[in-house]
Amino acid sequence: MADTLLAVDGLTRVFDVSAPWLNRVLEGRPRQLLRAVDDVSFSITAGQTVSLVGESGCGKSTVARLVVGLHAPSAGEIRLIRPDLRLQMIFQDPYASLNPRWRVRSIVAEPIRTLGLRSDEAAIRARVDELLGIVGLGASDGDKYPHEFSGGQRQRISIARALASEPEFLVCDEPTSALDVSVQAQILNLMKKLQRELGLTYLFISHDLSVVRHVSDVVAVMYLGRIVEEAPVETLFRRPLHPYTRLLLDTIPDLEAPRRDRTPMGGEVPSPIDPPKGCTFHPRCPLASERCRHERPELAARADAGRVACHAVEEGRHK
Ligand SMILES: Nc1ncnc2c1ncn2[C@@H]1O[C@H](COP(=O)(O)OP(=O)(O)OP(=O)(O)O)[C@@H](O)[C@H]1O
Ligand code: SF4
Ligand SMILES: [Mg+2]
Image 1: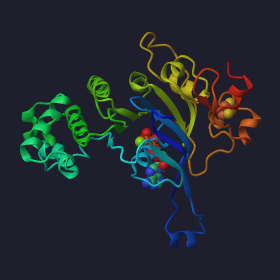
Image 2: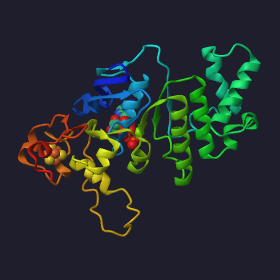
Image 3: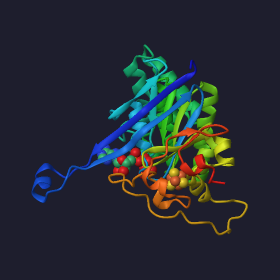
Image 4: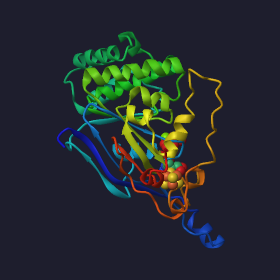
């Protein structure tokens, strides 16, 4: 499709997490492989936000790192609409990704210099001031160091630096998870404003469904390295089909009935080194059947919109 900016097909990443060779030989331990991302396919339309959600360790960051090229895929492919498409990544911890010894002005100017986007110092300076303004900082903030800012302001600096390279596509890995709730809302609103004004496309990653609901066009729910359900945001929240999606939605704080007893998230996430057979969610699933224990469900089209991987849904047992 002409307006598909990114298409990911059968993406898989396996990490070798074996003990060192000598230990393996002496202790008779086998090689251990961890399938962090397992046959993941999705696409993103230009100007949209697709979000990946799921519990810690389900492979969200690994997908992000594969998409921006920080990891190589073990299998599958990542296609961009154009090979020269500029993409950038925004991380959870802005402090760790900002050089503490550089002034903000130099941090934001670096991509402009590296890519040769402005020819002289005056033009670079003017562009940095403009970028600081775009993210809600003042030109005088350029003379300060990262430690002089709050967490939310530091995230604004990383956004300004990401924008400095004039990207079309931003991969945002938990960009607000380290921030207070009120500051989170400000950064999310800034990101939405930038998307409208600059026509940006986002791959947005979060474990927090209330954040995802606020920013996404399409949501993909991941469990143990695989997408188990994907749908337009309203469809997913109005009518979640996969038992895992329902479990996740059940854990969102309900503002209208905060004291209502809710079913706790049942059970632990199994190890991705030795995942359960069949549907990997079956040990935690209230609808699990014998079929679920040995046959892995494929991601199939939902009746309304999106995709879901669940035998109970296919058999109509989920209502
Ligand atoms: N470089 C690596 N080497 C070995 N294992 C890794 C590596 N990176 C990730 N993993 C493993 O891959 C799985 C997926 O990790 P990933 O960081 O992608 O999850 P996540 O969904 O981003 O989790 P979180 O919400 O905690 O950030 C985990 O089991 C993790 O331990
Ligand atoms: S396939 Fe079976 S175990 Fe997996 S989510 Fe559906 S009903 Fe539950
Ligand atoms: Mg992560």
